[in-house]
Image (tube, rainbow, N blue to C red):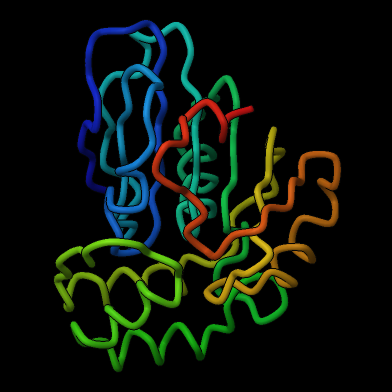
Amino acid sequence: MKQRWLSRSGTDDLILVFAGWALGAAPFTGLSGGGDVLLVDDYTRLDEPLDDLTQYDRVNLIAFSFGVASAAHWLTQSGFRPYRLIAVSGTLCPADAERGIAPEMIRATADQLTENSFTKFCRRAGMEGPVPAIDVDAARAELHAVIERGDAPEMAFDRVWIPQRDRVIPTHAQEVAWTSQQSAIRSISAPHIPFRSGQSWEEWIA
């Protein structure tokens, strides 16, 4: 995993973000507030240590897209427990035809990946603004790692946001995947990347 600070001012609260595949911080640039924000991505491996989280009184974890399963794997391995755990546009079964994306589709995305196909992916996901740079080889390896890692352990989430216009991880697949956690689900009229400029981090934690 890679990590980078999006905001660091020495507050007592931290938002820990498990981002999506190859998008980095781009989906979150319009969000404001939240105190300290640490972003994690690149799920080729999940055993790299994170910065010390014990210095914070409260850590809220927002997991987006493939970051949902990756966060659950990491939480199981590390034993860390956030104050609130939020899933956005993702499931615990990333490579699954019924509850995520069919493995053959992920493999095809990896095998046919180019800068041009990544741009098309970003637009299909609902990204506004510039498309982030991509390291094709690293992004391809990450997709294969997600497939090989498989489903994450069952884990209770405090909130599950499901976009109704998701063209990346189909809306229906997300609804099926979260059947056992109905009380946590909130549906939103949005594409796969639902974050918009002017929103606050707190809106997604609520």
